[in-house]
Length: 128
Image (cartoon, rainbow, N blue to C red; front, top):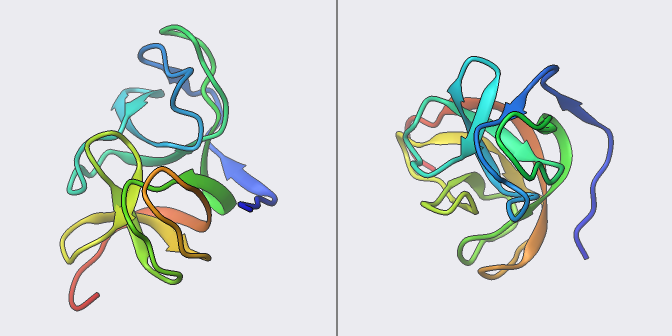
């Protein structure tokens, strides 16, 4: 069972679209203080993991970037894998050059909700 704990979030962030089906998915900054579903592992706008269900553009979006969070897996993940996004905003294992947002604390299969330790997004360089 996925777990979560205290989280650091960005203040004053809103959704760029209806993200009500994207709770625990990765999001990216699409404009100033606005987020949308993440879709590219190399996009430097990666923000963190959506914690709520904003149902329209302009609605408040709670985006965690540090702490222990639930996240939806986009493929098979092994504990301790560095995490990035797939084209649907789900967490996948990162490769060198990808933007990472944290590390898997548990293993999981595609579509599973797993536990991850989030960190401020950064680019992964070198061997994984």
